[in-house]
Image (cartoon, rainbow, N blue to C red):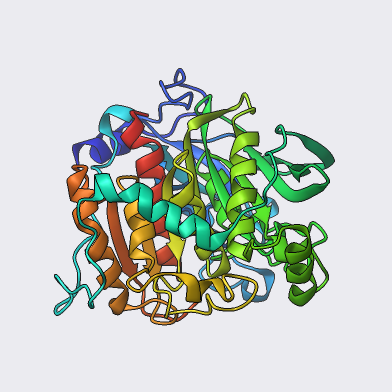
Length: 434
């Protein structure tokens, strides 16, 4: 409270009145007026700064007050602006805010590891992950054999630029990366504008196409405006570089049956998720060539299909350090993993006792957060978290695996998105000493 009381007593000062802090941001041990977009939540749907620069976005920002102006249709409701009438706008506003100094940063993220009553130790009969340091290589090989993979040498990292977009909060580059000698996949690379760590962490966001994660109409079939599935857009607001990547099912054919037929023809024995694991590795290869990012701090987050993609990519690529998987269906029986574009008949070839708690064991001790909504995932998903927790404990990191159930259906809630972003921020920055 003394920090906030001191800030209140300091009064309002202009932007850049203080020297940059160790984070490269202005040390707001005082206050600043910041012009901002209307209607945005500074943590869930993080507002873009229009100007002047102001302090950090998202969870680093403490809102002190101000005026968020309403749409013209609700002009008379809740209008509290202290501005002169001729300067008022129905679409912009201002707020008084400050940035938490590094030495006074919030406490570490509370662990999301407290199962509800009845699920404290429940593992639902999942096979125990015993003698894991010895058995993990065999488990990995078992899954890789079932998944299949293109039997070709990985191409050298290469990308070609399609278009550049200059947005208020980031510079976006629509690109294609080479995933096979004669095949390319679409990505959208988003670098934040304004002060941020350099090199900075990077967050991968896989989905059907790059449009929805970026909240940008880039010509895909699944564009959506800013919302709770705009993970790439929200990640870049946290000061991360974000990379949205398209699922092979959208690029290998017009429809899934065509995509899978082409995959089977080109790479016999390779499942859809096996193809994704390959593509994800090629993306990480490319990320390692980018000078603006810290390739030792790569996170991944995805919802639904993207949640499955996040789970599988992290399980088979240790270069991915932090994972958030939203409503993937963590159990093989929880979702449609037997569909031909995922595992198909390969799911029948897995030995008895095989399930995704083994993939969580392969991810350990890297942080993994499961978001449930009582659709594909629910309280019963705790069995998988509990089954993998002994492996996390073996590595001395039982707090690095957790579950949050928002109980609101398949679509994540703003609270779930906030916790997902906080998980990434904590483990990609705080844990690494930034």
